[in-house]
Length: 376
Image 1 (cartoon, rainbow, N blue to C red):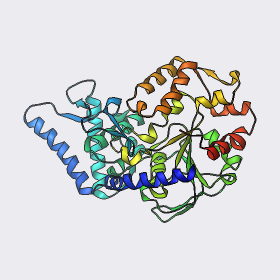
Image 2: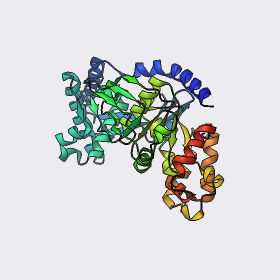
Image 3: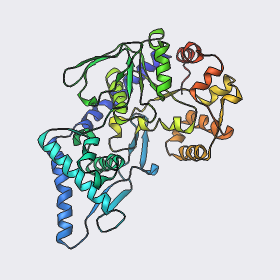
Image 4: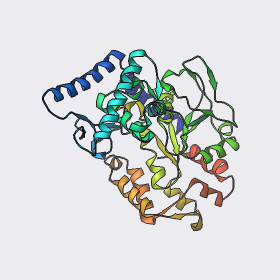
């Protein structure tokens, strides 16, 4: 089954990659022109005695999302638009923050220098109020200008880890070797600059939790199975972890498998790897497969009842929201698994497998899943 999967991934990547490469980089002059057009619009509004507004595609409405089997999730061309007004008390702060970040981005692109989102926040902590404001404004600007964040010259700090059959070179020439079986390498903060990727891996395993990732390292999982690459975003994955997965998929054309908790929040982690942002095609891996922990596995393996956790009201709300997302009906196998959770109103962490045996995850569960094609 794995050999067939490899062929499918190579074919799928050949369809998606050319378009993705066109999206990944936009000329600096084009970025500057788009920012100048925004400022010109503000000046024209003021000259007419009108209050300036800023408009960008909404990133929070799932009805704005389209699903394509080769691309994954992406923003539709007819998406709803958010308006930030300069004459409204509730949005004037957002308007000012957006202009401040636009000014910073303009200077960065003009001088061909880079800054992290943290750097931007410390430029004016009083205006922004929190790091979260800067993070959100940068995303809004990316949507407004229809430009990937990398082309804005704004970098995000990495929190992810990667390990396995992988060597590559950073943009500054540093050579990275991820092959140590007991330690992991931090995901690069400049994924676009990575080159000379060398790997014999047969698949990439996305691991939700750092604790599970460390357990796989401790048990030397990567050296006991087929050559693979393991990556974790330590919970909700940061943009660099997502970019790294996409970069490896584009380069190696191998299957991507996900190991997450059998709960609404674990399932929701598929969405960041199929991101709902303007640059979704730079972040999306359309063929991420759910390796585990599947709700149906809980039943099949007869996991003890006391190892399961009852749903909270938040869990019920999250799952209901997930099932209403427009792309879910196009993935009937996923939908069926989610409906099992909805029926039981219980969830399970990957760690619950230790209730069967201490090393069940790495000795039995994952090897059998990989051998017999136990993914959806």
